Structure formats: structure tokens, C-alpha cells
Length: 343
Image (cartoon, rainbow, N blue to C red):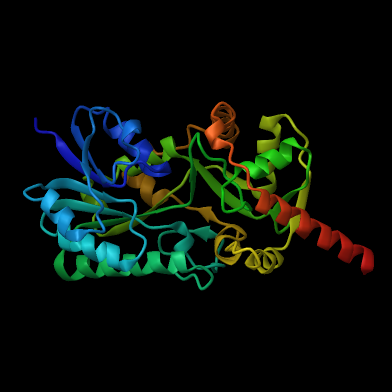
């Protein structure tokens, strides 16, 4: 029996690496990556690589000449021009084009905290999300008018062993918050920490995603993929502190305040908080589970965060300090404490 061929544009990121890893172990799939090859050492030897900067469309066209794929998976398309390029490259050359959008595209706040694929797409707070919406609109238009075989996937907060899910962190990532916890310093949590959120380990995400590949019922449809576990942000931070074996010194700050204060240093907290993480969301994944019954949470957060912390603490290259963010946290907390005294 011939193998199905899957092409991943990107393929080495937090989400896509888990899918590539799982799919490459299956005897019925042949896996290809198209990227710049900067993380080639991390790719399994049985995965084929096309080293190419896809933003150079003519070079990509030459390197893809004569090739067709059963599924093309786009993980690094952020603006409409990029999916328009993909359309030109892969029209008539694939049975399914899966585009990674974002659950941040849903209206903030939505009319109902329970989110389905039918929830309105609208995000005035974050350009990233608006661009994802525009990409979806282009692709669905091509599906309706020409039958271009698109499937849209909307992830929420997906993490792996190299990342710790957080609400408030600096430009250099999560580690400075972990260090603040270990040093006993106050850690900023947006709002009062009671808003609800989903965190999904990438291995679980891969199960849902692979179940949509070459699934005829997925063509022309959008699916959100998240785990089943719903936690408040207070619970998320407390779980991290428990895994570290330290006391959590939570310091709650209104998202509007964080957005205004973050503007001074170029932190886009309006987008990432007001346009995303400060709003309660509970994802109804029943549409996905009708097509992929195996989709469930096998790595709950209290296990996933320990996997991540074990990896980060044993890999110094993951321990990236961010003194600018650390100083900013101290200033925000000091200013609020001073305002309490002066009230």
C-alpha cells in the first residue's frame, strides 16, 4: 500500500514538532519538511527535508517542482500574503491544506464564555489575531468558489517540555518568572487570577490534529484543538510553584494597568492579555471529538509542567534571564504599593 505524503511548512515549532514526531513513526505516512533547515539536527532521520525560505516563492516553486502531497500543513502563515502564496504553490497539488490559525481570533470578550467554532471571529485588541482572521477568510473564499481543500485549526495555549505556560512574561520568554518564583519574589498575575483557561501539551494536540489529516469530513471546516482541562490562572501559577517546591507570592494586577505600563517597554499586553488571556474561555471540543474520538487529555497540567521544568532545569540554554522584565515587574509592584499608601 502506498504511503500518504505530508508536507509541513515549518515543522520544528512547539506544536508542529509533536505532530511530525508522531506521524514519522507511522508506517503509512511519508513526512516532508520545508523550512530554512536551522534546526535540522533535531529532525528525525526518516523525515525528508526541503531546505528553502518559502518567502522566496520562485525558489520554493523550483524546489517543489513535480511534487504533490496528500496534505500540506501550514504552521508559519501569519498574514494573508503568505496563505495567498501557498494557494498559488499548492493549488491542484494537494488533497488537503491545513492552516494553523489561532483561538485568539474569537471575539474578546465573546457573548458566551463557552467557545465553539461558531463563535464570532473578532479581535480589536490584537493585530496578530486580525491577520489570522484575514487568512481564514481568504482560504474559505477559495474553498467556496473553487473547492480549494482547506481545513482550519485553531489552537489555544499549547506547550511542550521546553516551555512553561504563563500569562505575563517579558520578550525573552518565561524563565524570568520561574526565577522570581524560586527567589521568593512577587509574581504578577493578570486580573484577579480567576479567569479560566486551557493549557494543552503538544503531544495531546498532535492526536487531535493527525485525526483530521485526510479526513474527508474536515474539508471546508474549522476546528479548535485544546485539552479538556480547564484551570484558572491562579491554579496554573500555583501548580507551577508546587512543582518547583516554593511558595507562590501572587501579585494581581488589572490587565488594563499592565497594558498601559507595558507600553513603556514595548510589551504588547493589550494583545496578549486584553485580546486573549485575561478573558475566560472554555472550549467546547465536541465537533473535533466527533471526528477524532481518541482526542483527550493524557498529560494533565500538573504532569506536563513537571516534564517542562525537569527539561528546563537540566538545559541551561533554556534559562534565559530577562533583567528588563524583572525590573519592570518590581516597578509595577512598587508603584501600586505606593499608590495604596497615598490613597
